[in-house]
Image (cartoon, one colour):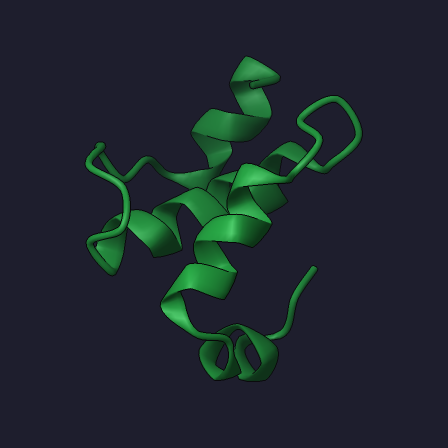
Length: 60
């Protein structure tokens, strides 16, 4: 998982590109959820922030 230091260093477009290129079949679902929630909180994705446990339970 990306550390907060690396995540904060990246520019907004880098973060969005990283998220868009995640292979949902190979990445940990909680990591996917963490990335998505960060992008939502920063206004890059218009969606609802979900608890990470929801991603684990759904097998997103």
